[in-house]
Length: 79
Image (cartoon, rainbow, N blue to C red; front, side):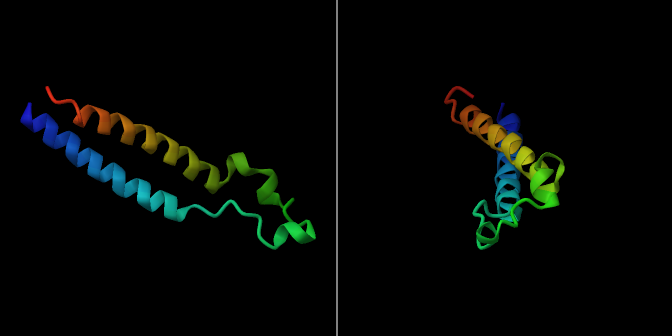
């Protein structure tokens, strides 16, 4: 059982590092000065679901769920 706990701990650390990197790679959600002139309706604004940003958001959500599950499993005292 101790080997499984070590493996899960290593996965947890890798997940934490990947989450930090992915969050830092994402763009801010504020509109900035582009919203004043109305330039927020660009090609990338209309196709958010297929952009690199949408993939980063999806991967971040998956890693966040994995983070919560691993944290719960590692916190079980009998394990």
